[in-house]
Length: 214
Image (tube, rainbow, N blue to C red; front, side):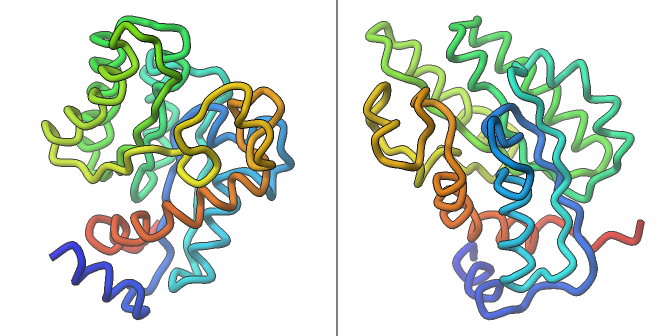
């Protein structure tokens, strides 16, 4: 069924009307050290408008440095914006700081439930962190799969797909798609990320998000 929907989307069978997709995340989606037109949310909006969603709006609700706990604290402001759908990209800072995964999972669950309680569907975006050797990195990645399964969410497994593969610091900075810190994507890295996630975003919109009447 998913592939039938994807085929319909790729053939241009997108609903008419504006759809407001909120990107709720951290520096990876906020556009850390990038000009506004090069940030993920801006590049995703352009890609959607060029591929069957001419009136799509992508709202930036991402803040650099934010953890899942920060995401919980700013929920009231996000809900007031009344998006039609949410791309939830949080957790990287929890993982890099090795914060307790039970708390991160609980925070993400609170965010998911708050949006869905208000009739706002969620596309969950997973992350990976550098290997630790203690199992924390594997448990961190599994956290997203568990949340998607529990709440019947569409999951995009790895947000940085296209900008980074499996190698971490410092080699990432050598591919031109990651900044010198080896952690944040360049403009070309964001373009690769958008290209990879776009089909999933379109399926998410087609299956879950109705055109806005706001």
